Length: 154
Image (cartoon, rainbow, N blue to C red; front, top):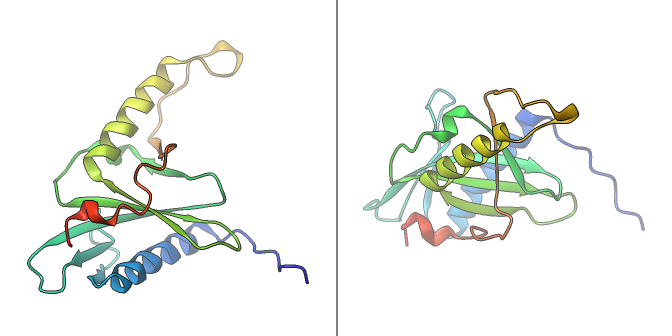
């Protein structure tokens, strides 16, 4: 029997799915996870250990497809605090979602340096790339895949 073809979700739905998947995974691991309201700047989920003695803020980014690459904006270049993390979700049709847990400072350094390198290279027709607010993050070596312990909640 053929597997049904899954359509790519619209961006907002993929983002919402990613947030709920992260909250579910944190809960499954015994942590307390609470989704924030949309007006909480830079934090999608507040998570703590079961006795609430340690907590972290989490920003969730979701990509779809086998290419584990997450789009961000220029604000990702700012390293805010030690207890802020990105949980990057990769949604692949007919597969279990994968999670990459990356400290915010690592993301900030990566997007800043990779964007600077991109600006220095030549694009189509030998023309310089024009600056924009778009940035991207990749974990090519899967160094942060399922690294939940980095949040220090255990």
